[in-house]
Length: 396
Image (tube, rainbow, N blue to C red):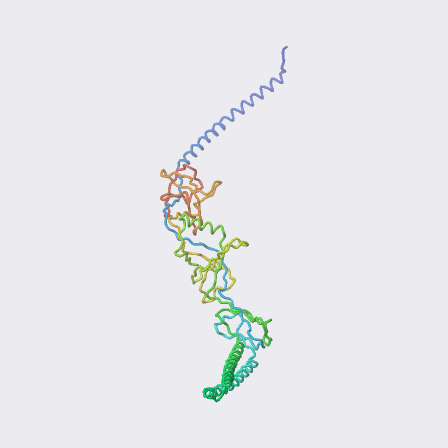
């Protein structure tokens, strides 16, 4: 069976094939130029990869590094005294200025002294009466003793005289004690501060009758020395003990840490303190252990309940390795740094980091003496990349 194609169809096919051939021929220069461009780019990339990358590096040299631990702390008074009235009576007036610093022995309140002066005079009069009775009993005993020795008086008369003398002597001692009590009560009407410190507000107004139910007058808070309390977590304590056991940390002699106080504005408090107490009990509510340091506060710059930061100094890390923080990177498998090997090529080195020290990291594992650690220029690095090292200051 023969197939026939009309003249119009044959003409259409010839035109279409001619157009496709023309289009293909016109694309040949583009394809050739693109392939040539890719080859040039690959060649340039290859040359660029072979060109050394400029980096800045440090040479690791271990050395002993003093360690400082910093915590949030709160100031507490080393002694807070509650001032109370010891006797019942009317409060005459407040003498001190509320909120002012008072000295030890300074008068704070005065009570009405008139009733207590009367009681003292009565006690003195009773003492004088008992003293007179004692003198009579003593003289009577002095007369009876020789007469009884001469059998002029009976033994009973001597015993009676002796008993009266002893009773009068006891009465005199009791009267003396009453006088002392009256003097003491009178002295209690002048209420003074037992310590040097800062006062709180007066809790009773002038003219108030004071008794055991309202005897609280004010509070005097000792501000020097001051306690600076802070807490450490259980994890930090265990980590600290573990590092000491492994020799990664050396404690100061007799564990006497120096305490430096940092104020809210970042300034350093001028007086150094020392750690004086560590609570042996674990606080289950906060999950911490309480530590106390004692700091002299002669100018009253530190006030109770004030928040500060405290730095503990005295510990030492022997043969420690430090690298700048910007040199340490973190990937999916942990921290790592770039080091320069003996052939001046980049090498990725996993490391175990410790705490921060100023602007550096402590490195516990992964680096050794003489290693060159890349600090700047790490972004284009790949394992085996040639590098040109600009050495920075050595780091220990």
